[in-house]
Length: 92
Image (cartoon, rainbow, N blue to C red; front, side, top):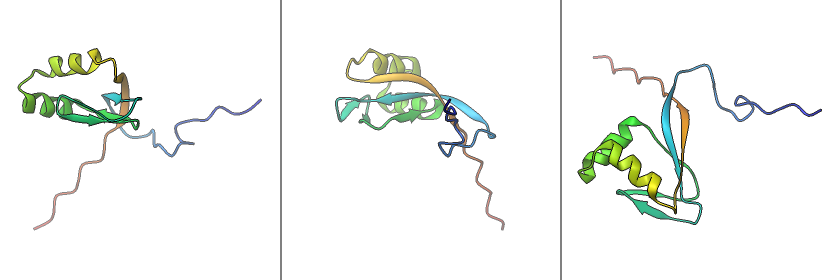
């Protein structure tokens, strides 16, 4: 019986913190929605990106998420992504 691949096999570290995000793809090709471009490669939108995109378009974050989910040309799914480590402040 073959061994089941894990996230570590894919090169992803699982020891760090993760955050909720939305994974958005446009399987049919390039698609713009709410000032954001999507394509066949997934785009992960975290809370900060959703808030910034919503603010730029004069929407609430909830309205922006609903706009993405209601677009039949987009595939939207919940996802978890690793949180990058905080950058060290330059020493003076």
